[in-house]
Amino acid sequence: MKKPVIAIDGYSSTGKSSISKVIADKLGLIHLDTGALYRGVTWFALQNCLYDDGSIDLQKLFASFDQIELEFRNNNGELVLFLNHIDISKAIRSNEVSEQVSLVAKQKEVRDFLLQSQRSLAEKGGIIMDGRDIGTVVLPDADFKFFLTASIDERTKRRYKELITLGIKADEQKVKENLIERDKIDSEREIAPLKQADDAIVIDNTSLSKKETIESILLHIQKI
Ligand code: DC
Image 1 (cartoon, rainbow, N blue to C red):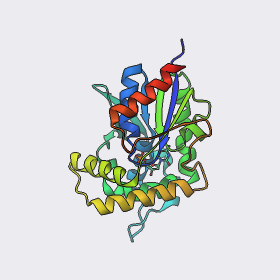
Image 2: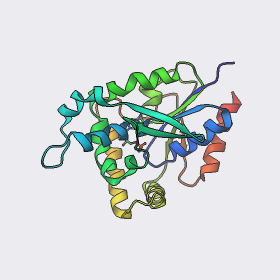
Image 3: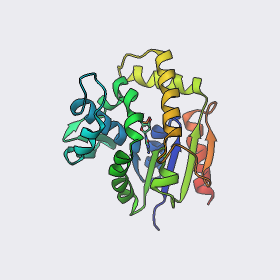
Image 4: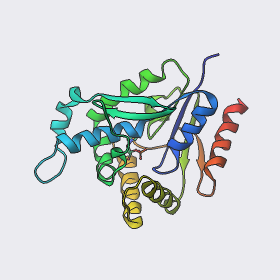
């Protein structure tokens, strides 16, 4: 039997990636965190495509796509993102990347650059992909679509905790402002905006634990 293709979209810090990872382990699927790809391109831009004032030179970035090789490597069941053979899995969580990633992700050139590789990975089935436009654009025919949401205060708490755990200095108010700003840019952009697919199951996990959210998703999948 062909393994399912599952799309998990939603707002920042609703737990999409960590939840998808557990579901992938339980169901024997590959997990792809597509936000990491956009973060990887942003990290490359911050290293190589800056104007003197520190802003990103988008034209230079677009002209550099052929120098970007993104690859997930399996490290004891954990997928680690490499860019041009460098492990960037921690660097892409930095505040600098978080502050610029929505600007980079709203560019058509960037989305086109990353689209085909995301689709090819799903061709054989057996994958759970999380992001913003998976159910609407990348995999509109996915077998299951979920859309996660939670209150801004709860999401701020989660993101703050994640940063501290990673050893990254953080200020709770700034974390909140960054989440609000990113939600706004992600939802209002012209191409592939963050929005729930008409056929997605919406889960508000403000007062659900990670375990409860996972159980709710599994219940939907196993019901069919
Ligand atoms: O999931 P995340 O917070 O790591 O994602 C980082 C950014 O990447 C997010 O602000 C929007 C963008 N993104 C996107 O536009 N489309 C996706 N499929 C995944 C992420």
